[in-house]
Length: 188
Image (cartoon, rainbow, N blue to C red; front, side):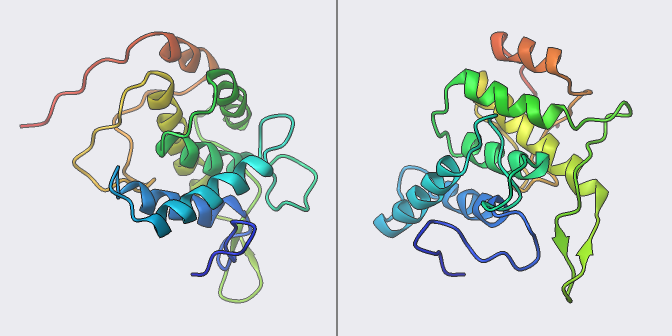
């Protein structure tokens, strides 16, 4: 996968421009403090792209040419930035997280317009993706706001990156940003 000059990547299976960037930043995060110069350059261009395309309301559009905020693109972007420890101010993270939380339904799931593309140019709607990636992003934001590194014995992919979470809502996010979360013990 080649990075474009503007820091983006070609979107093949997903319409959201932050989606491949999220995965690239996730991969570069595994380098820790020992990143080769070319990896640091890729990471910097990814972050610059995301920051350049952040909308005034704190969200991201599905594609830079789109004029409306897309909750799932916003989840991809804030989750990636929070995961790599990009120093967005707390109020910026809160504002973006509130946009993701606004897409939460009463049953706890999250809603977003379809953003996946099938093997042919047909848009595929996978409703569970909005919930999985929104929870992943909000858990990364929670960790960033509480300065608590996420600890897991599992892979750092959105499908299994968060520990047990109760229903997420704006009040809970605000409480967690000002209070230290409970310590999770290792299962024996």
